[in-house]
Length: 473
Image 1 (cartoon, rainbow, N blue to C red):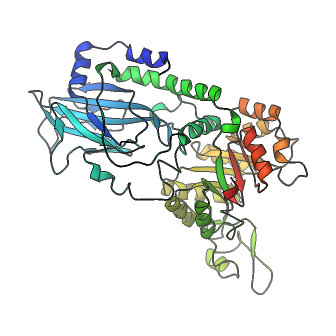
Image 2 (image 1 turned 180 degrees about the vertical axis):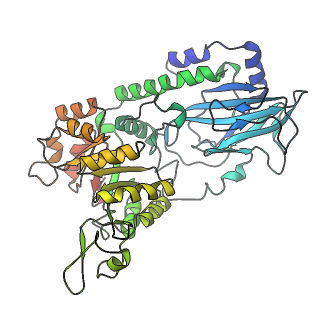
Image 3 (image 1 turned 45 degrees about the vertical axis):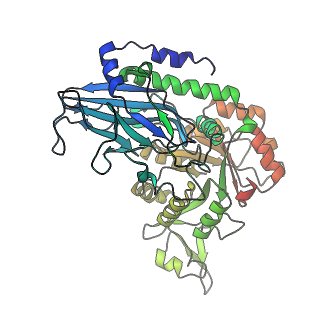
């Protein structure tokens, strides 16, 4: 194992020897899948002798609860991994409660943003003073028994630990907001690294992990170390990975336009079958305020003439010859979630911003980038929802992409050069890419169906490519 001075510095952090010994005595033993590639590096402990808010998890630690005997002491373990199979770094939690005699009387652990008691059939599994808990393969959520993972173990063509490895990029939770900087390049570097660690779980939990006392450190030390650790990983991967190796996002253009109608639910299904990571969908707004997936401003009436989307209700639009399959954005989100696809939404109407945000928030759908040719719309969107990544589209190579993206507060530059005689991968010069990267921006290109051009774009190290034929990506 190569030298890791940053990790060594964490383990050397000053600690109260008595508190550390107590934390070590009761540290949980974690059972991992036989094929799990990532084990914890450390845990930050906090001792509670009275009810108080957790310093690292959105909850209050309560010693006296109605469903269990009163605890004299609770120990919180904030457990750190450098990697979750979908994103850079992971922080899960376990809580162990002790009575006045030092016996373990209760335990809890985190589970996908919440937490649960670690009891199976009403009992804690103990090995001496250590609670035994199971870790979900790749994702590391905790359970008291392997049976909790039955639903997640069900086969899916886009498995969390395989096809979706790395799709979360760099994780930034509220705990580290403002301290960890997420950039498109950091996302791409993390995605590339994790794609190489994709695996198929056996759901046989034979890896038994026990914390060494040296891996336990006061929470404050782990909290202060974590942002440095993330910056260290991003810098390391930037040195070690060549742009041509980047695992870029494979984005199906308008779903999978070569295989199904534009912006349709069938197109989403086709894109998933063809191994896309996300689908590009155009968003407009009907007269009755419903966000819909449509590229053109109007649909054709049976009797001739145009039925403008902005001036028509959803029912009126669906009554047109081609409108029966018109999908709402809400239907698109539900289908993408079922297919485990991300969304690249192109705004075609300023009025759609509010309803679009409402739908995304209602469904807690955050695997999304929003793009537009209108930098003013993107600026308004970013002000309303700074957590959403945005992409500014432009057609001319003469445009200063960095200045345009800066004005729009965008995260990605999206040159739309595929229509020109020159190949877009040749217009993307090394100097252009270097300037865009120096500005902290990502690069998305479309829509490309020429294998040689796709290969050229890949050599440049772009972050995403759209295609009517996502199988080419």
